[in-house]
Image (cartoon, rainbow, N blue to C red; front, side, top):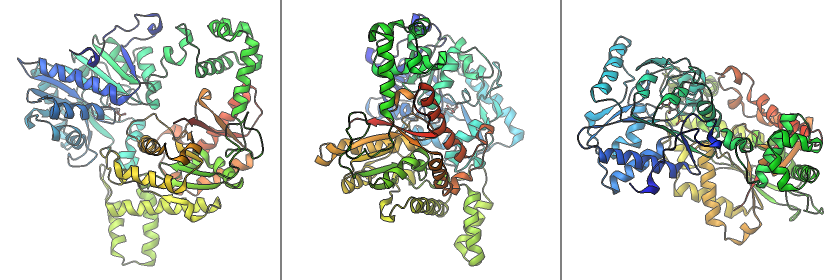
Length: 636
Ligand code: F6R
């Protein structure tokens, strides 16, 4: 086997740095490249199994998409045949028809089965449309069928934020087998995007059990993105427990977790490497260690003593920087330099200690927002300042965000209209569609259009409040989002053209964009990737030499302290103004709240987020601000 294309099998916990780890895991910088390794491993297994069928367990969701893409490529270009393969999918929603775009039957067809030569009768996916009387026998049959073929040779897994594998939610027993289960509220919430609202996500699923999975001869679990970091660390380093069903994998003799940098970021050796390794002290790692130390000993930067450093495994850092005094002062200045009330630069002041340039004093600032409202949530205060300080601000909404509007919310508009025009057939039809919606239903084009209009009018309202001229608000409605029912349409040239032509038209000095790089195939990530391709395409244009790119962290998250390059403070009244802006996006405030911890509205969560970073700055020894919005510079 080509060495480059293999996954290396070291046992976990073998080295000093992995001593907390109980599952073999490998981290790669790119989910796409590492998916190729996994696909190659599967292909090798398929090719070397000649005397019997190769029994392959498969997962759905965003994690394995690139593995399937590569398997299809290998089939089309490298003679990989699936004629000798029998597949068993882990799970399917219940109830759902296999024809629905959100069903796992549909997902598997689109991503894999329609493009390879596997015989139809060798494909097994749990049925989502059984009558309840048939479920028990069906599950037994599914389980027996796997056993009769000699068991799973290889099982591909993803992991949910509840630490589920398959749909084995917390509480699943080690001995569980294929069965009907109820989905955890967090899982329902994560699936809401695919179903246009949480209320339409089927509440149950049929899934292989933990025992079914554990009997597989080889298991590979894929996890990408920041949102998986804590569950991955808990699974690899924590105790074995039903509370985290994936932790049962610690007992499997041949399992590998394939992770990207974000998903592995909470592992001890990556999050706090100084506890297990002799570190190379880069600037970012130094900042991270000092902030960690401040929290650990409960002191601000300038109060840290040599003893604080040495007692907490950071003597190596002092050796690198010479003295604790120098290190503390340097750190303090680094943090202070990030703070500015002038996100477009402060005219006539030196640039030395400021994150943005003073010149040109009036800048063209182009703000990209994946969905309407991401811009306001992440940088509403900064947008107000840019406008007040005389910059020419443009906001570009990359997608219509129609999927973020609930049926209940859309119904309000429809009913108002029907009061005025009771016989309007199109609106009657939309009303019927909503009232007769079943779990697993996909919105009609007309309903999606109505939902897009709702979001356009909300964005126009917030733009009015900001005093932003109408012509400076751009609704780009990128085609990939409109054509994409469930994670199957990747962006293409048309998306790129839309973004590039706007940048070329505006010739911005500043671009702000959602740089939440964590979740592959998410709308935010795809929007960022399109922007990145466009920047690459345009970077030699003369106007791009003057263009700085700032990333805000979308998705109701703050940048980690060590990654903040610009921190824009807000006064209490500026926080209130920001809340008024978010309030204009009623469809988002109206979302059904399924999780207890989400019981705070989006408004409260946003201001909490901005307040919490201000508290952290204050704790490090900076001035006390009410709230702060944060940005990281992107260099191209
Ligand atoms: C899917 C499945 C689930 C997913 C998990 C992660 O068949 O069984 O366990 O693997 O929910 O989903 P993604 O990959 O979408 O983050």
